[in-house]
Image: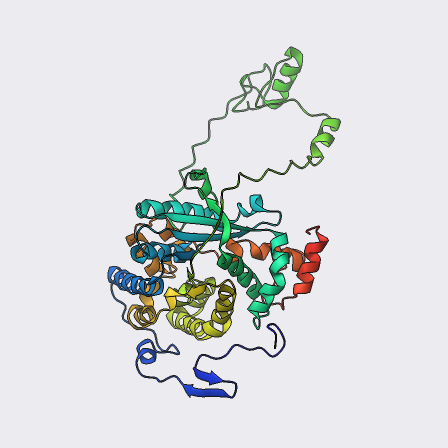
Length: 455
């Protein structure tokens, strides 16, 4: 039966299965008891904060080491956010010396690369790549920027939808599309010195609290108008110390001007100002870098970090609604659903390009540490998102020499790459009307792309 046809279903991960059904369930001894799978009660007595970060760092380091062993070339699906940055930094510790690490950054732009460069993940990728290079001066990090246009999406939409099946909702297609083009690993190599100024950080959201606002200046004392016989107050910024009526009368008589009291506009001038301005010419695309395609067969992915370490907004909602017990129940449900909801789809999409998807955050040792030892220490949801969400992983990033990354606020893959706003406008008419749970219709997407003039 072809992929995408009715009848496909994800195979449960509860044991060895055949077309006849479950042949042998997984034994409960060993790993499954160690991590309480399916997840049971989270550890109630967390270690001190510094010790929690050290334990998670050691477990993650071992997970990355096992997944890059034997590979000369390593790549990371790189949004520039916390999860992928920590993986890239740990890959530096274990990848062969003298070999580059590819950071594959995906962004969508309806009309090409100039629009893709405005995506949040593009700015975050450039800023975080600079921080990684500063933290690991002996390693070459190759930032490969993959810019996906509407024409690119139209060309591969049917393939992506087939690989995502039986996940048939709109959000699954968006996630699969971002992963599909990232796993291809074909884009433009971003030069380390190509205009990476401070402006590339514009729009990034950090979790550090802003300084308190300065106290407002006391109001200036009112003064009377300097014109003889006038009882009104003078404008504070009028050079002649007059009110508006007297100053404009003086300016008309003397041919003078006042910045505080510009001349009144005529009706014709007001009508001309109300007309919408002509649209500016489209900015030319920035100079292209050299084309590059990752040679890595091992692609490190950050999936599982949010489910394990309370990184989603719904975790904060559950905590606000029911405290720690409600948060624990939400995390349990996320982990139980992870294999059927995400991992099968992600593995099919990555494998399509001849690469192996590797998930260090779902390593057995990492799960054992997080579920069995850290417990509530993984997050502090009383703090703001860029501080309390995945707090233990933020502490790991800071220990690894990535202080700015440690305060980045999460952006979901479909929004950071801007695939969701693009596909929502096409399929729902506007981004605000987008519904990730709606059934995805590939024919509708293609017809809408064709309708906006993309060939």
